[in-house]
Length: 317
Ligand SMILES: Cc1ncc(COP(=O)(O)O)c(C=O)c1O
Image 1 (cartoon, helix red, strand yellow):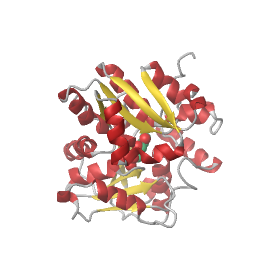
Image 2: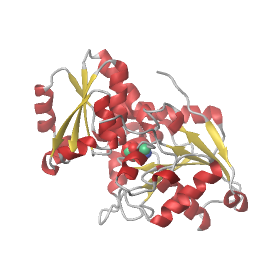
Image 3: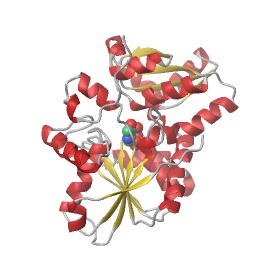
């Protein structure tokens, strides 16, 4: 299961104008389905499942979750059973993401918001473990200690690929940033772009990251999360945001989606225009995958399918 992703240079008039050298770490190319940070986060989790002789994996997610989609395929590929505890109504089971998950053998259990909120509570997890003793439980988004180990490998790969100053990535649950902090060991500026609204609790995402960090990585001060570019909240974006992302896709031939990678991209372009970066700076964007999410957005008519590099259609239902 050792895979390395390529690093691609991106040329754009804005970068030239501001004298920036920009590359993108194409983790979206790691695997056609277990793409981006999903591969990194699941790798050591699945190794542990095998070591512990468990036969099944349980995890949690929303109805369009990239994590659930990737986990279902990864388990199918590894000959493991999988159970997805999904926030919401059973009606979602026919959507793009969950149709694929079931196609790869995942059993879905739909729970209401109240039950879903218990997903990190010890008592609830113990009950689940008792009910499914042969299962290994992976948290929502795959973000746990084992995930950090896999994500940290991005830093070792980058060290052999490029000399750079700043690494930029989207932040949802914080697991990917936490993994990069542990792997980077204080060498580069790590700039996370928050994709959700933190509301009154401005430090919400930073606290999530800190909670995931091992003690040895807690003193690194080379990272920050910019929360100004959530564009209205998780999963929210405007028609103008879409136009800008599509224009960039056409200029570079790199696929983006508007929930994670696209929000990082727009934040990056806005920060350049605000003069945030120094002339001569070498910047790496981390493409964390998530392109499957376009299927669900098109299905809900939140984007126009013909304008995006869409993933393949869902299996016949
Ligand atoms: C495609 C994609 N990119 C980025 C993220 C954010 O990563 P994290 O939750 O580790 O902060 C997610 C969510 O897990 C994701 O699905």
